[in-house]
Image (tube, rainbow, N blue to C red; front, side):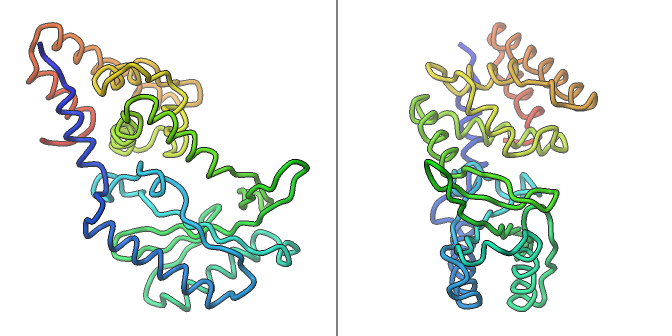
Length: 265
């Protein structure tokens, strides 16, 4: 019987930045350098430097598949620094980056300061820990210069749980659809797409049935007309995958998968 399971596995593995690869080793080395340099520069003004985002979750794509792939670094300023507004924090981080990496373009982009080292983007995000009634939580800058709550550890834990419950297919499926998303000029934001897929019912599915399920169930209510058209094209290709599988034509089904993702195998 025709199947695209193996094809999807091969592609999703290629979309993963392998442990012990040169790319991951380089990224990890730069992260350690950031942590050391930031703590040296700011001293006791910062309490910690944490890695978060898609790199932490193993859902980031190599830059050759997604030019917007970046490494998120959370810079937690201590409580005595709470009096400063968001722009003060970002300006301080930008000044640090310009001094530490004088030959590297440094730009402010909400909510971070972005610099690119050898085609790898790093998002340096200022953060403060806000004490709530029941617990402490992170706050990062929003687009209006105020603070907004963020819960990176909670989402990381949620994604790990749903991935484990599904037989470890959720993270590979997220990478596959992030590849489609990048190939279609980002109808969804990367984080939005991860949340959408993490909330889907993917237990008792394999890569093939999960892939088709996501195609059939991606929401369109938040998308522009162009975005909705891209989803309709995706759904049409999904119908062809099912048709070719029903005809037991594995090669044609694989061709459609590669067309969707913009890859060759």
